[in-house]
Image 1: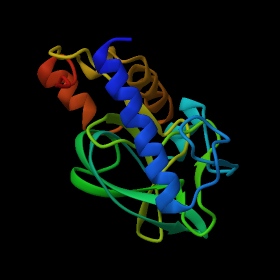
Image 2: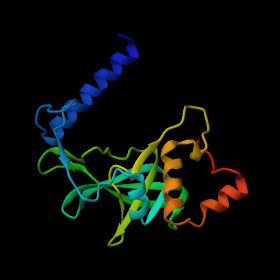
Image 3: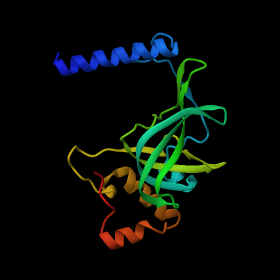
Image 4: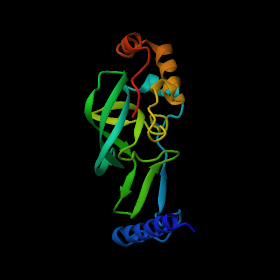
Length: 194
């Protein structure tokens, strides 16, 4: 085994053991030693057209940091601060606090995730569909948090990502959103990641 791969495997195993010890998690029912409980919620939407219609805002944003764990509507939730790079629907911009259903349920010692969804990761750029409920900007699970990844050292236009192109098509079908058409007209394409 390559030395870096070996160190990575050991680091992951050590982190899993520490998490199990700190949080009192049961032995592995899922890789990594963390018990995962799947959460079914009617807010989970996989279809891009439904996300476009349901969302109060659709943005391309980079996760700066996870700011905390808590609950939303009695369910475990994770809060993150994101930096909005482009708004496709709505008026959000700059740094925004968002809440995502799912996170560590410390009382039960398990990670709770919405089925077919993953938690937002710091440093990752996402296409986010958000709904606002009681002043909280809530990430639409599954279809409302699509990761956008470019090759290291390469700058990729946002419209080259299938998830973004699909969302733009869905947004055009429901009603043109002021803002991104102006960017397209002025620059010929949406700004690039990277």
